[in-house]
Image 1: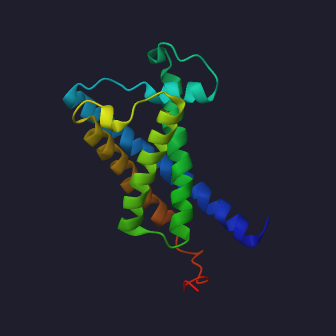
Image 2: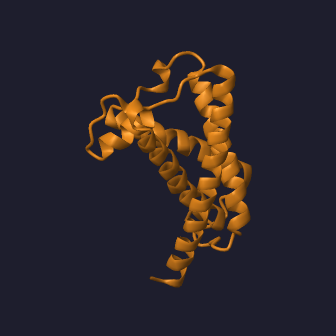
Length: 163
């Protein structure tokens, strides 16, 4: 592996750690929101992961560990991406906004492609806003942690012009 390849791997690992911090913050926010709104737990993440693993999905409520596994694995995976962004100069508020969209798109792509979930346009009123809020919390906390852990050490000036 090249020097740059090793550096990318290191910042991705630190980004994964930042993603776990962001997932923890999102989880706390979800628990607080559910106490206020009395919204039940979602079992879509468990169903999604079980479909991807080729496991039965009936009564996904019986699989809380699968729910947590999907939740935390997604956070670490997308945190790794954010770590690479931070080190390559994709940082700050604009990166956080983009990362929020990536998190939402990642979840929706897997949930809809597997048939485990429905498109947000079919959700009950208000659920989309709640999901966007929680994914935004994930992106903000992950971004702050990643930008602190990963200075812009891999910024490249190659291709700074379009031609």
